[in-house]
Image (cartoon, rainbow, N blue to C red; front, side, top):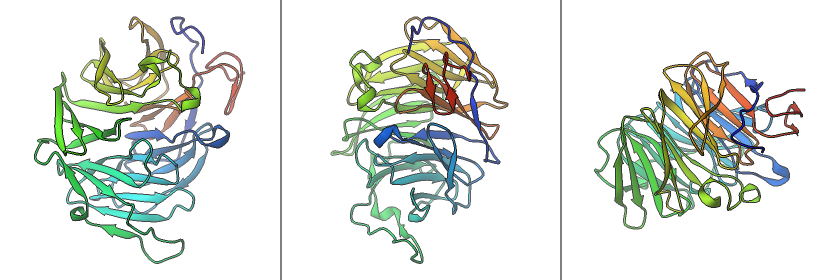
Length: 350
């Protein structure tokens, strides 16, 4: 990966077109066989897209939402995708056929969805109802290909965690490496929940509204004890002008926080390269900072709207930015040949 303290040359990103409205969220699948992985993008056009993670090539569009899609995530085994929408539903899709499998009916806008780290038949949802719910899909028989309609599941079939705790909409949900721990971002407050007791065990009020909250991890074959977080996933959070990072199995051990000179709309973390990337707020640029001393290493220009989401690939070799301008850009983060890049220094296409 090279020395993180040396500024890298400006990246020549790949640009993924196809969406017609802002892209509020992007995320990658875990690494599969032969180092294959995928990316899903949520969009306010209501049409989340599945792409090849290395190249950004379009694979398919999940059609069926009747409102903006705020978040999309791929299951640990990448066989399903979950999306959260303004149409008062979360939906679960078959990533191979594009078929809609489940409709999780809600009573207000759904803003957040999350799978556990290693369980593809459980799903957490949250949104403007201010309720954190868990849906267990183990006992639901999925729709078979070609049949008439997906299974609709009412909220009465889910179970609520931390009843009455949230006072503002839930914008992000993270399932920690420890499957008994869930974390929510709501307003300016991060909360940790214990699944067995369904209780909130910790709450931290940050300096402003939380704009980004993601669990960052590398595939086991690419992680090491020398990585940030010691080889464990790291919770990366943006609020106001500060980027916050927590580690450990429960994602509650504070590692570092960086107060920047500008607002932060989104944050991504390079665990191996020991740097973090933020989308400025207000603004359209991404800034790259050193984990060691907070020094600015690079500035990425090219988007024409705020960057709402930043995600690193499961091998750490690239990261993607999703923007208000309706595009996704993919930035190289390794030496040599990778994806559609031809080799040379990181950021070069030569």
